[in-house]
Each structure stands twice: as structure tokens, then as C-alpha cells.
Length: 322
Ligand code: SF4
Image 1 (cartoon, rainbow, N blue to C red):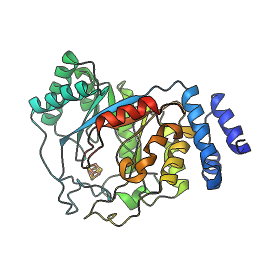
Image 2 (spheres, rainbow, N blue to C red; image 1 turned 180 degrees about the vertical axis):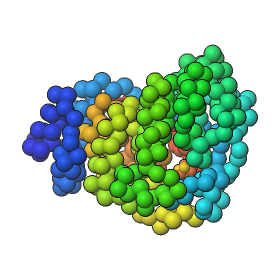
Image 3 (cartoon, rainbow, N blue to C red; image 1 turned 60 degrees about the vertical axis):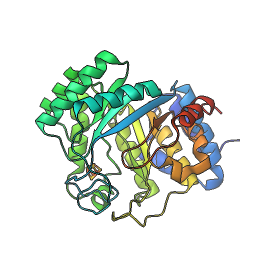
């Protein structure tokens, strides 16, 4: 039998209501003996909302030397991480990578660049790539290019981009401990701008940055308020050389419980699991669909290696509904 709180709140969600932050906090406060019940209910919500398995691939189109000081990031120019750096890749290579990701089974291809924002010439190259891939593949085209302007959003949309990725990373109340070089509201502004231009929004964060359970619920609530379409969740793998290099890994229990909380708070959004799942979850990765995730980032991530692509696809197909 499910805990009465899980029963009543999942009924509310299934009836179409949105949970308040206070209700999310009540779920977060449940004792760990009720976690499997929470996962079971999260899986029920995923099925009831009709979420289908979703695979997304990213490529690091431009890497490193970022002006921002995000304390978790291998690409920040503020820390000596030894992470590879390169300028924006040539057009032919960006296109080639998209073609090979389609062949590997990805449905969505996202070009990701380091830095606060791109130059106008760099946006042009991304647009050329989008035009080319749109004519040669059935990939949904996405990008994560930092802060947008009206002009950039307009050019990207006209080139065929349909989705924009911009993580909030963590809760507003925790953000000043994570980044001091730009403001949380600039990130929110970019999400709103992308939405205004008709782009679907992919925005989530990283768990394990020293945030509290209340701050995880706060982030989920902010994303719900922005009506994001997809929530990518990463688990911190501490990078040597960054201020968070000695942070403890999340336990599999906390990682799975967090995913379930996001599913309760964002029932209509796709929840995609990205970086850190291999290290944090190990053998428990196959529990992710049970916890409410319906998508996986496949292939390799930006500065860490992903696991075998075929294994990921198999897990999504077989472990979908337990
Ligand atoms: S997360 Fe993005 S903005 Fe922050 S340091 Fe890394 S590349 Fe720069």
C-alpha cells in the first residue's frame, strides 16, 4: 500500500493539478522507507501522461575558456581543469556529427557551446548547420548557445531550430554559491525569449551541487512555472580543479528520489537524464524509467564519456514500464 500522502498527491497530479512547492516539500520529506512507493507513483504518472521514450544527443561544438565561473564546470576559464578546449567547429564537422547521430538512433541533435553568448558570426555557422541538417535528416534540431538576443532567436528559428536548451543549473536561492558572473534572471530571460520565438524549451539542472532537498523542489517549481517542455537532469561528477572537486557523489537513493520528485512537480514535461548517471547510479541506471524519467541523453556528453549507445537504447526500450 502506498503512503497516504503519495496516494493523495499523485491523484491530484493525475487529475491535472500542479503541485505547490509546499506539497513537493512534503514528498521530499518522506522517510526513505517510502522511496520505492514514490518511484512507483512517479512511474504511474509518466505512463498516464503518455510520455514516450526520448533520446537526445549533444555535441560539444565549442569547448572551454568560458568567461563564467560556474563552480562545477570543466569548461570555465576560471579553473585549471585540463579539459580540452576548441573554438567553434568547422561547419562540415558540425554537419557530419549530426548525420552520424541520426544513424546511431538519436531523435534530437543539440549543438552545445561554452561561453556566455556567441558572436554573430558564430550564430551564422550554427544557422548554416541547421539549414543543412534540416534538409538531410529527420532530426529535431536543438542548440544550447548561452544567452540569446531577439535577433539571435529569430535567426535560429528561421534556420530550422525547433528547440532551445538553457539550464538553470540549480535553485535561485543556491545560484549565488554556484555562479557569480551572471544573474539568474538572465537565464530566465533567455528561456522566455526562446519561448516567445516559438522554440520548445529544454531546461533543467545539475543535482549534487550542495543544494538542499528544499532547493531541489524550488528548482522543479521554477521550471514548472516556466512550463518547460523537457527537463534534462544531470548528477554532479566532481571535476578536479573546480571548487566542487571534493563534493560527495549523490547516492543512488537520492538521485532516484530526486528524479521522482521532478516527475511529480513536472508531470507534463519530458524528463531526460544526462551526465553523471553512470557514475552516480551504476547498476541502478535501469531504475530511471521507474523513477519517472522517459528520456536519455545518448552517446558522449560534453566533457565526460557516456556509456555504450546500444546499451542505452536497450534500457529505454526494455525498462520503460516496470
Ligand atoms: S556551465 Fe556554461 S556558462 Fe557556466 S562555466 Fe560552464 S560553459 Fe560557462
